[in-house]
Image (cartoon, rainbow, N blue to C red):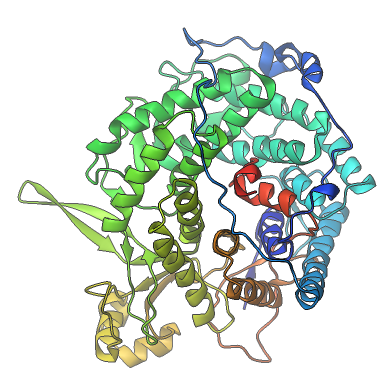
Length: 583
């Protein structure tokens, strides 16, 4: 498989997920914070300490909503009640821990040697890249991983010291991606602080939070997500434009956690304004319960659009809903209500059972297009699966336990099993970025039909292949049975599949999931390791053989005697602490 250069930051969130499978006993005694802090420390963290904190707002809000202070919901523990680990199981777990940690250590060492303080290391050429402002994205993304893997002495301290020196007023980029800055930098600092208690990390989180707050400095307080940071530094007025819903709906966890830690509600207020409006318009879209992929933030029109997906550019809008409910202990019921409405709509419209040669009872999440037909709207399912949507099974499992929706665990299981099956269906044991399948006519009774599959393959073929037979297209496109097309053959080191396998394991105790995760790790590392680290791959479909190069993944993670610590890493979704929900 040929390789492409893939951002080095993916390494750490990816491998951390694997470590979680081998740390299932809770060892609170080993969870310590050498940099303990208290509320007294907050007096040293002031807006005036930072350029962005002193920069006046053009459109200051008239009112700042306080953090919720009502009775907490009585949410249950979402974690399965595990029995004591056997000696044999412990030996296997620790052996696998070491294997995963070795991969991470190699990737971390390569970053330190070849790309220190740059955003990314190119794991094939050893070049350094700065697509995220030049603020050492890999370093910040790796802080919580270092802690989780037990590298808590000089290694962690040196990394924190370097991160504390990052200057967020200097960048060579004119425009920055506010979504990426939020999840990588603000989320990275918050996650590492929640784990370690190192006050230096909270100070940096506040600094990034002050900067990002200015992206919301618009007439209607909707964010500018492709942000001219240089103009903002000069105080130029700005307005929000057309946004993707993942961009507008994926600040809530980080901003709320920052307000909780500092006692300053302005960040919570900034995102709650958005979520309140999202809730108001949720039931007036073309598919009530779901939001369209793109929205007009300048006019606050969040309910008009023809594409509805749970995948790329929309995913984290939905992912954050139950996790926000947990983060604020259910003190606002808006997040549970929004999740339930979205889940019910997706179950009806987006989730489909694919026809497979082994008649698997699995589910895949597709996307829906709204078509105008004689003055009325009709829905058309595009049965395209995405690796990124593999987050959904874990999310539904978490929400099933959190909101006491027991029957939803069946759906969660079918979604996770769908991703596991797709991994195994490809020759290298790795799922591609996107793929097409044939939906079953009914979900309850779906038998494999070879002729129907071949017919669907031919129907999906590109124009230049229309004259070919189904068999010729299958051979030319290297289609495993059940797949009708593979629009994007790449593997981009995404962690969503193993995250969901982990969450389903923690919520149900299904032991076979441990082996599924281990199979994923071995397949990915085998196919993606470079001389430096790990890289994405262009094509996961070539058959294995002596001429297939073993090329890289993007770095990977972990350690973990501390199940509590690992849970907090993963459950924060994109970088926030929600581990308490799972204990």
